[in-house]
Picture (tube, rainbow, N blue to C red):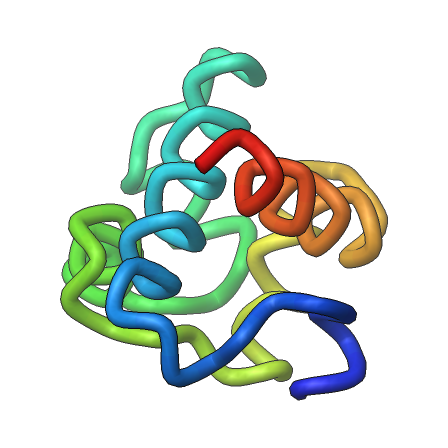
Length: 88
């Protein structure tokens, strides 16, 4: 997981929030609801909500599933997360 996010520091207290913000932004850009992403990702809607609110850290498996639900490659999500780190 560490290598997947490049220079990001997993122990950074804002990391979960950046991940969640990224997932939420990408979902909205696609015009999808949390329920739709959850169904497409085969994940629970509450889990998607907790990720978006920065309460849960998604596993690598979940990142891949969410990417599938958003119809993007997992690298698109991780690159967006990484670029959000540079904006801080």
